[in-house]
Image (cartoon, rainbow, N blue to C red; front, side, top):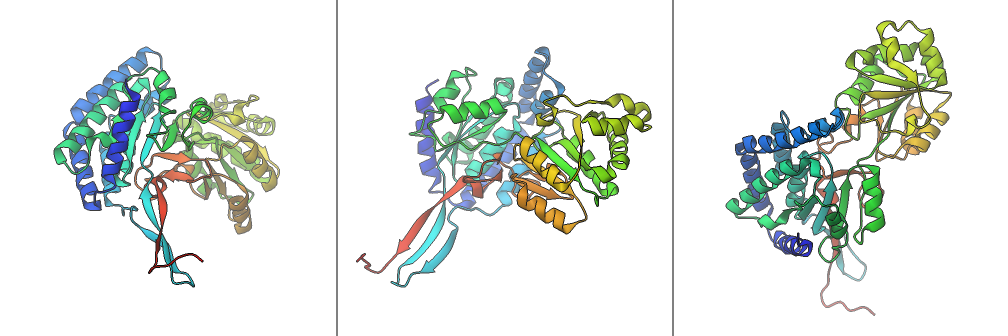
Length: 423
């Protein structure tokens, strides 16, 4: 593949996107949504080929879940339509003021330009990226994993065809690298003349590779070791549904729960209830020595076989499956210290009725999203009212948390005078 040609086309498309109106972007996105619905059979057939190949390779169930589009395509299209309904950030002015010398200054939001997204497993990302980039006036160059090549190719073909037929936006604004050779990832990371920002969505090794090899700024995220801490005031009738949702609703995603920390004063009552509540959903548990002693002394019935000792690395593991770590802590200080040592700054929660504990947790836990009495699964663009997202950034510059429309803009200073010169 000619990567420079792909980059050049995307850059030209980004310049064209800077000229279009919000109405034109929305019309084009609605055409894409309608085309995805119309061509759903073709898309699902391509996805079935990816799934069949993954099963043949012995892919784990958690990753098969990420690949699967059946039963989800309607929701993906609805997320796209949510993006259509959101305000367009491009052109928004802020920080306007008039200086003492009479100069008027403000900042205006502008698209970043060309966004390069490297991702694995999840073909829904293809639609999310296309929708958010087009609405925010950016072109996209995408490189999905080889395990979803058929799905991604079908999706991008439908998107490009819809854009060409509707006519408002350039079809070259959405590009897909269709050759699975990993050499093209390295080449993509060197296209600094054409690509303005790289966003990898995948495991820690992909993030590290991008940070070490990119000539383009990189924003990483989408990897999390997520925690729930229940303090001594935490109400179990509130905690159990939160833990169940955070662990079992979709265990293969980055905001699913990995570890529950339980305050020592309530551990003897809380831990058996957690196991009894989650074991019927297929959850197994890795318990630290104190938690293990409590659980072995409890009458767990058939759930007893679901509990085993935690290994050396278990509390630093992003499980992406129905495995949950359990640990007893002596204090809020110890809970925060454990999270600092093991978290990847994604999503962490405190369950408490103590406002001072909640305030300390929010102040001291340095994650992209912190939760008080709410599931970590809410760290998501759609769940936070942002529409679809490109990624969940765990970095600090320039965006953090779900990267939706505003996160894909930068700004320019606009300075208006009346013949002003600097003395």
